[in-house]
Length: 185
Image (cartoon, rainbow, N blue to C red):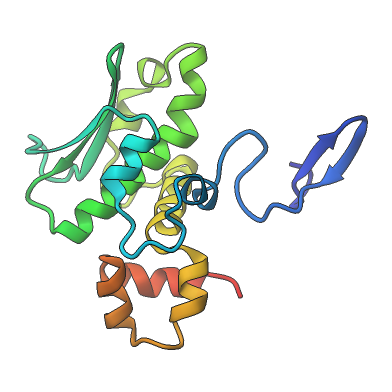
């Protein structure tokens, strides 16, 4: 990236990327939805999408720390998402999408080399509430686009009341309102 513009090499020419999402070599949430024919699914079948993207499974569990909503664990047998069983179903869906984002953006690209989880700092794995780093913000944005695709929002946001749209998408009204404020066009 040069300045605020995304550049990509096309042959010997350096050109501005016209892709509004993602970076070169890393799929966007829209790319993943499109690849699996889910770009207009309501609600997005997030567990099916995880499996389609190569995750081994998704499990509900209890965490010792009640502040932990979810995590992803990678072993030689594959990657598995764990989500707090005491969270609401809508919160669980967002957490699963957030962990899928970490897999797609941060873990899977590193599987060819050293495993990112093995290199992760424990402090980074167990952040305190309110702390956010660039990868966490990126995973949240990715998760929001997975569960509330821009194409669906553009088509339905003016037709349905926000609470109805949140129900169709199986997301919280709060998450939908944040997404509507941050969605362009």
